[in-house]
Length: 433
Ligand code: S3P
Figure (tube, rainbow, N blue to C red):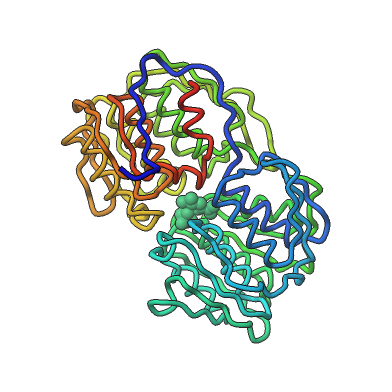
């Protein structure tokens, strides 16, 4: 056992009560990054104080922005204008965060100074060519391992202005889209990104709130380069549906459960889990719908239900990409089979999540998971047992295993502390249910 192993006992009763969902990770990253491009203070509330977003806050500080925390989840960021970044004193460390690295590659490719990036062991393995390639076609010079596609990466000062491009992205990825749009802020014309399916649109929503002109099509977005950004006085970050996902699944599969999840972001580019769970027969009521920081938010009431297997594929994938590990848990408690395809992107997340689900969930309920090249077949209702499972230091695998064990026969999770990447209070909340 590693010294950050965790034993999760099987539940003795249903999950009930209320859970305040912590701030959205994607929106928290963008709130700090974009505020650093303005020139007036932005007061950010319900910021996700977790390792990934702190990587972004530290990088923006290293680039010259003023970042002052009033509380763990409340801070003020003041930038020096669109052209006000300074050369960082040393490497920018993105830690475990793909969003920090990819978005900053886009933001820093046009700058007149040198930047070098590093990150943790997982981030060193992840593909950055998907961002470096379009940035190079805009005129950026980016070096890195494996032909300039892996960390460590370096961006040399741009020679003149970057060129606007119209990019047809082979992957539906908000990180790729955002990186190109951020580079486009500095380009010599209108930059357009088209995706196979629309990915999360938090960058578009927030850039609009900063006064940037965008034309949004069904699967494309075009950005008109602004002279300056006009920062809003405040940004309220809604709760993260990717964090709420663990409780949505737990309450749906654990007998006697009735949970109220407060302040969950329900941006339609993120709510694939609600569609799939409802399709499986889940009992989820969306209450008190409102706007929070330019994004829709609501409270979700989830009660235990009889779930059936389902099928879904590539089209819905960008709307639930981070929720597959916990949806797979729901499928193990459903009647019948669930077939997930078009999920090849999971192989290049913090770990190869398809392989991790196959290797670890089958320890808990042998014969439950079949592995496909781009997905999973999950046989529901197989007998479960206590097992020792690895998280591969992947926060979403660790939390999904915890739900699997708690709703089932208990579990021991190795390298359990990685939940601090996106949900530091997760185990406390689970214990308090
Ligand atoms: C994110 C986009 C998604 C998601 C990640 C956060 C973002 O990644 O998986 O957790 O904030 O833009 P991809 O863009 O690689 O699909």
